[in-house]
Length: 405
Image 1 (cartoon, rainbow, N blue to C red):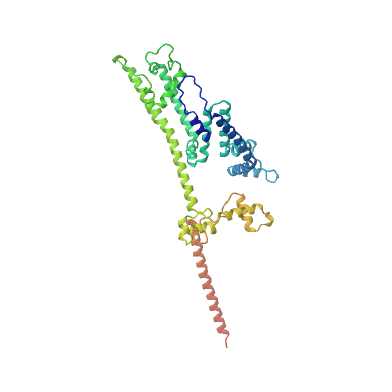
Image 2 (image 1 turned 135 degrees about the horizontal axis):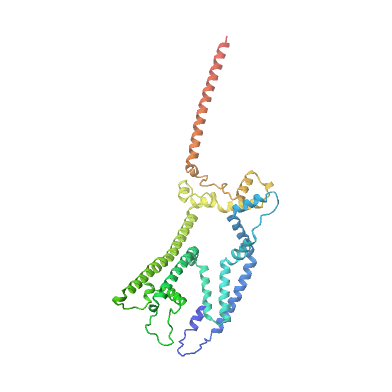
């Protein structure tokens, strides 16, 4: 940023004389700062590789394992009893190390963009390339990242729509070249040696893309106006159909479809962000109870998250299970450990805590019905046993009465 500000004020000069080469006095300081930025970027890449690369590789492997659980289970079943460890495929491991754990990190993008801009600009004396380094600001702005993600998230849909637009423009370029070539020259009588557009089909294709996409009214705004006689009205209707169809299909439908994909993606990201914010501020991480339900039970929400269901207590407990030997575990620890290894989180208290009976209130109807039936059966069995017991007591009393003198 400092370098670009210095360049801005250094080249605030009026190049009024043709061929004048203006070299500001502080351009040497700009070059020194550029070299310093190169060294700093290389130093940052080295430090990151030394301290963070191994950790990012392990995290990438864990994410890959979680994303391929079904494949891992089939491999474990195939190699069961063989003592052979499950390995990540070679190509997948290369992708994890090179792309996911290295190039896809925001710090690496920052260092590499900065390094490219200053190295290329310094050795070619092209100060315009220094401005590319300003793109690193995107990594420090959440709003800018969301804007960029809105464009890149559904890139497949954008590319498909763009390819469709180019195909449609190619069709219109052929029609314009073979039937309306004179109209694509804005000058009716060009001078000798003057460039005449649309002399070849390729040239005509690039002209239609250039002016068709950029003009609000389509390619008709670039074409030369023509006066038609009654004998050439068929040509007028043909050009009218060409102009209107190009405007409707390309300028209204296809371009707005591209804008719509970007806007829908941005709206989707905003909804996801709002949902995450709501969950982080109003939902317990452990039991998934809402703030209102916890407050109704007579407990403060912050107290619940910090004491009753402290997230880090569960994290420390799971980490300790990782370090323990299975022989030293009790039955509860073995149960939690096996659930964790299989990716099952049923050991966590789901929508229930010691201060609320939310779990019972929201139990499935089938379970409530089964519990009610069992309760009725138990009550009936209790009544039958009570009657039999009273009958036995009466019989004993009768027998005792007969034996008395």
